[in-house]
Image (tube, one colour):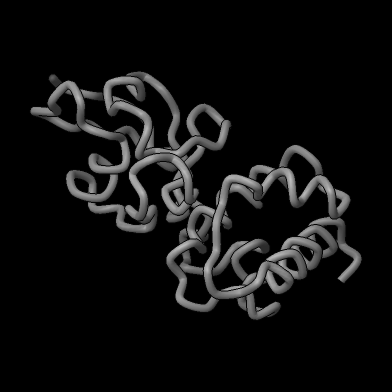
Amino acid sequence: MRVSFTVNGRPQEADDVWEGESLLYVLRERLGLPGSKNACEQGECGSCTVRLDGVPVCSCLVAAGQAEGREVATVEGLTGEDGELSVVQQAFVDAGAVQCGFCTPGLLVATDELLERNPSPTDGDIREALSGNLCRCTGYEAILDAVRLAAARTEGAV
C-alpha cells in the first residue's frame, strides 16, 4: 500500500508499505529520518517517540498505515532550517543531558510537546511527561535540569 502523510511540515509518501510495517521503520528506512531510535520495539523505552497529530507516540507501535493523511513530527523537525538547535535541543546540550544519545531523540520530542502544552511545568509535570522515556546513562537529574532550563528560556527568564 501507499501511505501519504506530512512529516515535519512536508508532504511525504511511502510506497509498497506492508500491512504490519511500523511508522518507525518507514521514517528511518524509507524516508531517511534516522533520528527516532529503534531500541525495544515494544513501546517501553520511548527512544522512538514522535508526535502524531501533536500527540507523543511510540512510533514502533504505530502501523505506518495509521499515519495516512496525518501529521508526524520527528526530532529532525526540531532543528531550524538553518541547522540552528531549538531551545529544547540547546538546553539538553547546555545541561549535559546528552550522553550516549540513544534516548535523546524521544526525550527531546516529549519535552518539546510538554513545553508547548505547558510552558511552566512543575517537576511533577516534567516527570509525568517523560515517564515513557528511559535513559540508562544520566540518572535523569541532568535531563530534569535540561527541561527546567528549556522552560525558563521559553518563558524568557534565562
